[in-house]
Image (tube, rainbow, N blue to C red; front, top):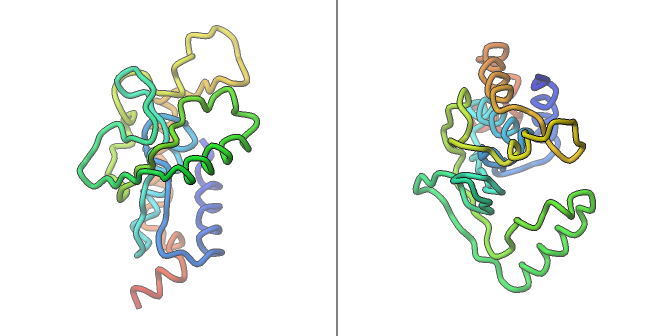
Length: 181
């Protein structure tokens, strides 16, 4: 329900760093915040002239934990098989994320997958069935480790946000504007 501020934060970060491409988490139902960032970047990307790539993290497509694979392949995916040294480094990096240690057992360390940002219908959840972040919505009380955001809330926010900003060139970065001049 507060997408304008993250959009401005994304724009500010892009303006601050000289990049040759943009990366965003996939729209996969793993985390409501990640799905919102994907939607925001998708709405902002037409103002950019540089490529936008999305990376697979985790999802619950098909009723099972999936890591580093997209819920629906579209033929543009690239999968990198990590070397033993890269796997060791990724495991060490995951250990740094102390607050999520009990939640990271499903994260794979053998591969990474990415692709050009896919075209999504953000008025619908990213896949049918239970989304990762809704697996424990049956719990009858608030719990600090359960995201109680409903997919309908995410979809409604993303569907209503473009009307407020459609055609807003302020999302173009100086470097992207230079590509069109």
